[in-house]
Length: 116
Image (cartoon, rainbow, N blue to C red; front, side, top):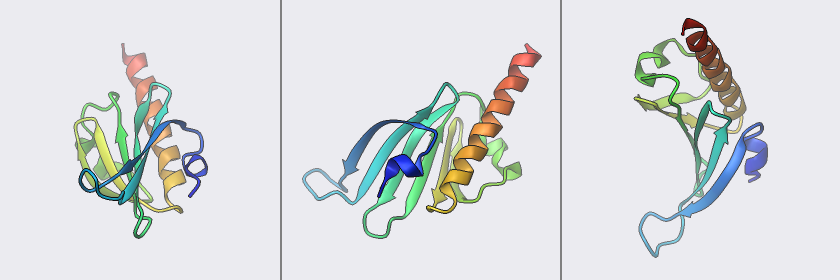
């Protein structure tokens, strides 16, 4: 799987193989990324079925939980709390959701800067 293609437009900062416990074979790959000062996170990809989970961390929204009800993701929200957003994705939804999050956070950041 080409993670650079999946995470187009993001800076890939690392990659790790994730075992379920020390010494066991990896069950997933995690690819770490960042987008300027907007957000950072990881893409977790399961080896058995290629299930993808996108973790996004940002300091711009104080609490994602209050925002996700109005947001229109292509993937599915798994959880949100504080500055952490966790989405279940696939190769067809990932690019759309990354672009949506980038635009959403850019707009929020610009609005916050104007309010100062």
